[in-house]
Length: 260
Image 1 (cartoon, one colour):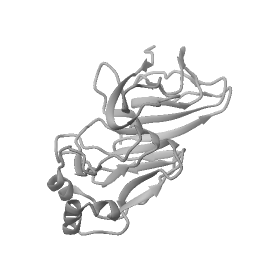
Image 2 (tube, rainbow, N blue to C red):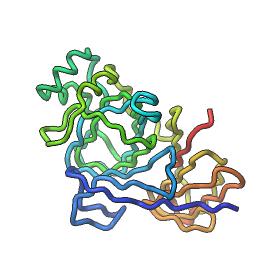
Image 3 (cartoon, rainbow, N blue to C red):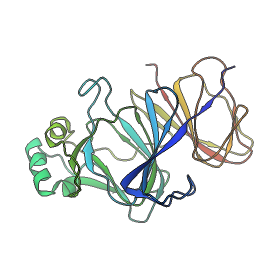
Image 4 (cartoon, rainbow, N blue to C red):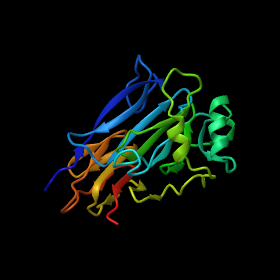
């Protein structure tokens, strides 16, 4: 029987990252903003943990076929949030493309965005074309199409390249619906389920394309493999699936690519 594969975390230094990474990783001397979970082949989905001490840039991603074959729809599950932590999704009210363009010259774009207070346990779906930003004081799990095409609209004066024309051209100018039901998030690119497993529970998933289990609380086992918090495991796509079990309560995000 094919065995589950543990993905390897790759820690990425960012100006907006954190040095305190516990309990997910040992603390770092350098500010770590992202942990990418990788294997020896490219998967259609990419899982990251993000650690923020400052606001990330205001940005937007294209959809499939607009800047390469694969766009970038993503979702965020909030793991930790300091009091007052916020994310921006869409706009407080619909805007015109011209006003959005002008707002990037003055910084008004920050005020046009809908900044949402966030708390641990919440989930947000960010389809391609959604203008968004992640605020400070947050640890989250991001599940996304495996693409890194990003158009920055605004970066608070940091000396990084902006892509205003491309961003304005594809931006969704409407109001984002807000938090999703954390029990299941569904898009054409991925399905993600929140699994709360009580002590002694066993769960056998159906086979799926690019099926990943992300342990976000507690620990357990997938087949014969011990699974710890902060680990991501890839299950075989066909055949009998390994049992997922826990001797104490644990929480997982299960994500996969839907077949239809």
